Every structure is written in structure tokens, then in C-alpha cells.
Image (cartoon, helix red, strand yellow):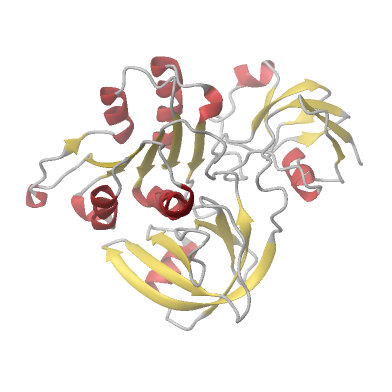
Length: 346
């Protein structure tokens, strides 16, 4: 059954088809609502049901609690309309004109950059290019119909090859295939670009990037885009990258980040290790990466924060930055990677 959905505060309206979630229907009709994992784990798509009823769907109970449900909150990637609705949520305008498409591609290059991280360069067919915003991701389409989501690590202007950072983990179908069977020249299929984790270029606020593990991939795309644009238009926004990992080897492109710090006066790189080894001979910051930000800033009221990586880190950063450091809620932009045998980004 079809239901009419009205979005506040914009007043935009759209209709759902039978079995569609609110998010699916909105995206199908060109209304880009914020989203990340699309499986009820990250919370990026959380909105409020002002009027009407929904089936909240299957989701992570920590991401949407019973208390929040009672207050009208819902995860729009999971919620199925049971009546006409009025919802309250943000809309993202910058991706509205970017078409989501499916492409074949060839594995051009594979490089092991850490014991459990592989960078993959994908080559599209001749004369084909993927239009995307720095920070977005693609879905690898598996032969059995499953999907695996990976952030694009290259900047939009550097699009001869699409770069993915794949971390190996037990039960990861595509990850295990990458490390055991994939070969250069293999053919893959993907759909994209996807996601609302991208650089908000209409702001002049200083930026803090917080990444854990391969959450560095979309941050790399954003930073390389910023540096590229600065060469022609200039950029005076101060930028700090906090990149957290367990050991020194897990900071698999630390030299690249360090080179940016040497080249750009407005950029600072702060690596943070949580479980450094004696052989690391580490003299830098230690502990949890979001705690390092809390230690360095008494207030984040004038900043814009981009956080990407593990759901635990992203969730803690969002809670603490907003409640303890006065970061405006709409200035926290995030993408939580939710690895599991069933889904999502790595």
C-alpha cells in the first residue's frame, strides 16, 4: 500500500511503495536524506515521526532505544510506514543531482599496506567515470546477490582508478575473498555512489577529522579534495586529523598523512595508538582517539567534525563532543563502519 510522506521543515512530499522503508522511498524519488549503513546500525538516518505510525523494523537496540521510540524517534532506513506520515529530518542537497549507477570494473592493482589491510585500485571501462562526492562509498555486488560497502579513498578529481581500503576480518565474505582468491585483472561489479558522509563545502569552520582503522579511507578522499581545491581557490580552514589505531602498523598510510602536514600549513596530523607494541618504539599519543580530541579542546562550539570508523568510536565521539564540548549537533557528520557477515562497510 502506498502512503504519502511529508518532510519537515522543508515541506517536501513523496510516496512510498509497498514494502519500502521511508529512506528507500525518499532516495528513489530524489530526496537525499542522511544515511550511512542502511541496516539500522549507525543511526545516521535517525529522524522523528511527527504524525502517523510506523513499523520500526529490525535494528540495533543500542542505536534506537525504546525511550527514543516513545519520543517518536525512528531509523528511517528501517521504518516502514503504516499510515500517512509527517517526519522531521535533515535533507542533504549536494548529492541530489548525482545519479546512482551500476558499473563493471577491473581490479587494476592490489597492494598489502598492513598485515590486514589491502588497497585495491579499480578500473572502469574506457570512457566511463564515476561522479561522486569526496567521502561517499560504493556497494560491491557479489555473485550471490549480497552487497559489501566500501568507502572511496581517492578524491573525485583523481578518478582514473577508484581506490578501496579493505580490512581482512573473520567472516567478511568480500574481505576474505580479497585476501585469499582475488587477483589483478579480476572483474567486479558495483553500484554507487552512495552515502551522505561528504564534505560540507559551504562552511568556513575549522575541521576536525576523527578516523579509526580504515575509516581513514573516506577521510583521505576528503582531504585530497580539499588540498586540490585549495590550489585553485585557496583554503584557509584549519584542519586537524586524528587517526586512531591499535599498533603502528595499523596506521598504514601514516607517511602520506605526515607528508600533508609538511606541505600544508593549515593541516595537522595527530596519530593515536591504543595498544602500541614495544617494538613500535612509540612516543606519540596513546589511548582512545576521540579522547585525544577531548584532551586538546575545551570547546568544539566553533568546529565541524567528521568522524569515521568503528561504531563504538563514532558513537562515543558524537555523545561526548556534543554533551561535553558543546559541538552543535548538525556539525557532527559521521559514517560508522558496521562489519559483519551480513553487511556493511569495512
